[in-house]
Image 1: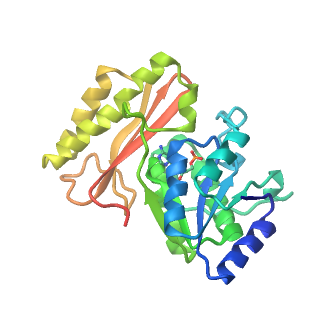
Image 2 (image 1 turned 60 degrees about the vertical axis):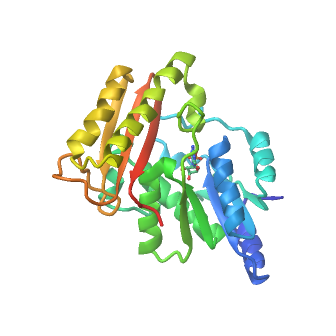
Length: 286
Ligand code: AMP
């Protein structure tokens, strides 16, 4: 497994691979890898010949009061996870990834301010810009993202289509603990009692999904069974628990009927820790 820190090195490596007729897969991450990330790496290895993992804690997607400085950094363990998943190259850019005077942004106007974007102003501009830069460095044939960050995946899908990145975007299912908690690098911040309380998020999502699976199409009723479940073991703050149209990014909680695919998205806080989770209703990624 090779390790690179500059765009030109990884670009040369990737171009050499493709010139040899090999397909390059790419999984961008901020490190602190867990089984969710490993599943993306394994999927990329199934779909392509040479998998590139990037590890970069991107400062521009963190707000001023967010956890950039204390975001977990577990370099050695991450390399081991990468090796085991069959990664061929790790791209770990340093601070010079943003050269002095850096100003350019790739932005998806309007969508960047919906739900997660409203609560974390500037977050999605940071995400789309860094992912665009990473795509230009790695030039992958296939890029794999997790549904865990569903809004992120929707914005990147839009960006890939709009800017003709010429790659296939694959969105992979969320990996969970046995008790339902979605794996997240931030779960390690949770106290034992908050971790227990946080199970209410996946339970609430499951309750709403089963209502939908039983044929319920009224968004208020789909959402209310989930909200009742959340209220039974309430988070400190519920930022949102709602339905999102994956094509328009409109919030669907007051529409007449959920009659096309939708995403049920949730965000809640336990102390200083914010968790997000979601489920798709119907086929959203193909
Ligand atoms: P990050 O955790 O922000 O470094 O995310 C890197 C990639 O891993 C993103 O595409 C995430 O959506 C994905 N990811 C994070 N958690 C999970 C999970 N529990 N299951 C599957 N993919 C995940």
